[in-house]
Image 1 (cartoon, helix red, strand yellow):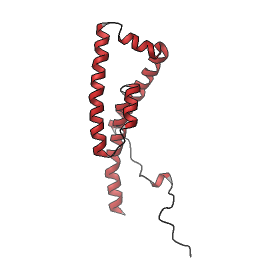
Image 2 (image 1 turned 45 degrees about the horizontal axis):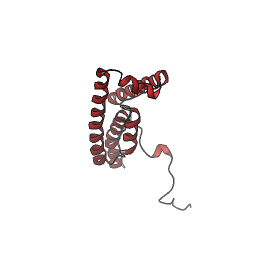
Image 3 (image 1 turned 120 degrees about the vertical axis):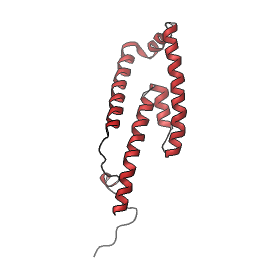
Image 4 (image 1 turned 180 degrees about the horizontal axis):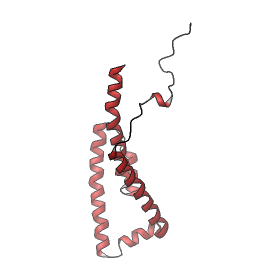
Length: 130
């Protein structure tokens, strides 16, 4: 006879969460994140980080777009802060991504949020079946 396993025994990574198939919404979000990240990398490689800001203020029209984007991302950050608190998710990594890379932060947050929303009902059903 063997002794019962301790309550805090290590579990394999596959035992943590059941596999949840990717939804169409997640696929669209991932596509946007990858495409925008590639565009960001290309623009930084082509113009440099300072060059991007120089271009952003090279005319009144481009300055307007930059200021509008800054206001929009500020509003998104405010929404993400409240939403992350309601869902018990970390806000700081996504805020840092937003401040450093713009829309990459909100896209990554939405991917995580959608994954959590899809996985939660599955976990609840798995717990009821046990």
